[in-house]
Length: 258
Image (cartoon, rainbow, N blue to C red; front, side, top):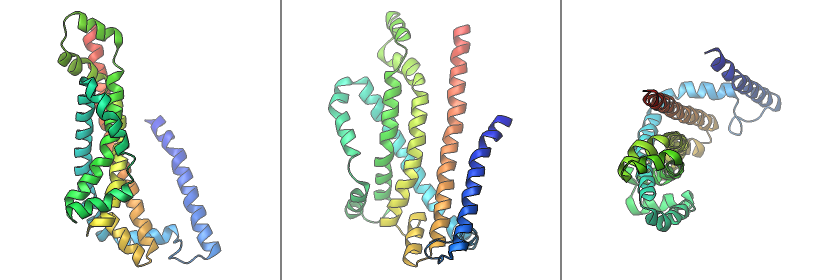
């Protein structure tokens, strides 16, 4: 416990130093609030706008979770399919890579044009952004199974299904969670962008209105909420990884000992 607290101390000190320097620079340079507000002004604005921020944060969180769950599930299924059927991987994997080269700035307006201003284009956009890191991480994990154990299980007559569920899938969990943590951050960013082009709620919409009104402190307050939201999602997945992966590893060790 003490080591964890010690590990948190350096970033906290650095953050405090940055905020102090920021506050001093704004005070010394006497910058206009619409150009660069001070941290204290941002904190006051966040307090004054707390009800609005909470409302828009809930909208962003719901959209993020829906898109993340759909994208992560799709990434998992695609990775499993491409791993189990090699000829499918050789044909479709290059297309998956190409799909990630389409700029999100170009794709977003097209989705709004095709599907309107409802929830669907936003969910599709988040899904398209989040499925890829999960799929790639999962495929990497599935391909790195223990060769000796694989040969042994094949020798005793294990089917492809048994190999997948009992050896390859459990062994790929660390890679899967790495992909999920990356996808969680991507899902928040893509949700914010989607809200800025086709929504009447959410933190992306809140930022857009604040920018049009030159309320820079509101923009920074929303950015702070977005960062906290991303860290919270990352932390939840990291906690699940610690519980699931460690529990799975300890179960396998107990099975070997018995």
